[in-house]
Length: 180
Image (cartoon, rainbow, N blue to C red):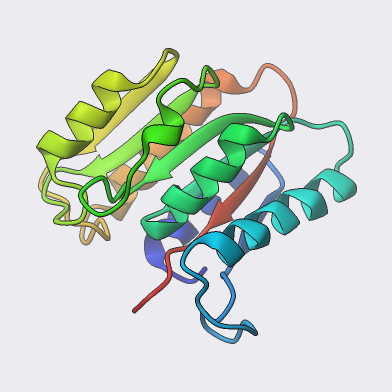
């Protein structure tokens, strides 16, 4: 949750007036538990959505995730009717199967570094091309997986991609990657 890319995405959401929750998966940082191969982490993401939904009842949610967190968070958000839009940051299309996302008709936004070794450009383009509309992608040229030296552009892209979606109040939940 303290990854700079996650912090900057949260900052973009907050600048739009969106209540925002950042959290770590089980076993990350000072969180209890241990890594659970994405299964337990999906439970963590659902618990975050439940918390936000309880705190802000009736408001649609945006699920944002970074790296492994995008794989977990987008899968949970795709299936949850409370989630109005999905944002993937540093999508690791070279490591995980995002097939669950292909038929989803919720707005999908991807912000990706052009030099991301976990989400090679050709794999991300294949994924993006196969996604159902509506969808948008923003390439941060020259950026690595963590958007090193390009965090301002990552934050601006998240802000600019979210802003048109705000026809009413939306709450965002962001999930961090698991460091191994």
